[in-house]
Amino acid sequence: MRPALLVGVAMIGGAAWWWWQQSANEAESADGGDMTADSLSSVSDEILSVVDDVFNAVIPVRAIMWSPDLIPAAYRAVISQTEAANGIPDNMLARLLYQESRYRPEIINGTKKSPVGALGIAQFMPATAAEMGIDPLDPMQAIPAAGAYLARLYRSTGSWVLALAAYNWGIGNVKRKGIDAAPKETRNYYSQILADLGMEGVTSA
Image (tube, rainbow, N blue to C red; front, top):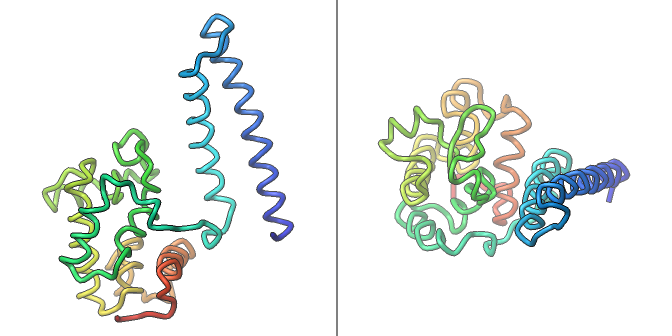
């Protein structure tokens, strides 16, 4: 592990420990001096959420490990069916949704929103969701819509690289500016998804 990465991990660990102590003290006071199992669980969940946010910001995207096992059981069938119906490579939609929401319940149900206002498992903007006629906070609507949208981007660009870039950056930007002008976030977005699927260098198939 690179020195800068070690420093980042150490900082995250220290911050998480401090936050855990502060939160635990507050929860203990609220419980009259005794930490209940529910209080402890709540504190732990909060810390894990914060650490996940910071970790993803500090650690390079390539260091995040992906596995199909991360797909929640409740969504596996609809994701697989959507991929098959739209000609999307196996697990590409699943990996895209992981990139968008990490399958975290608070993101899926809209409790936590993105800084730009994107919502749900597929992180649709409200205007886009309204245009599609779907509820972005309903995964059973958002997942098929995301698959259909990704397939449409692929048909428009003829490339999975460009389709993924367009999902993140916008089809208008991809067509007007070209992939070479894509911001680092977008380059990381499509390269990580394709790498995790063993599709590095893939453009059309």
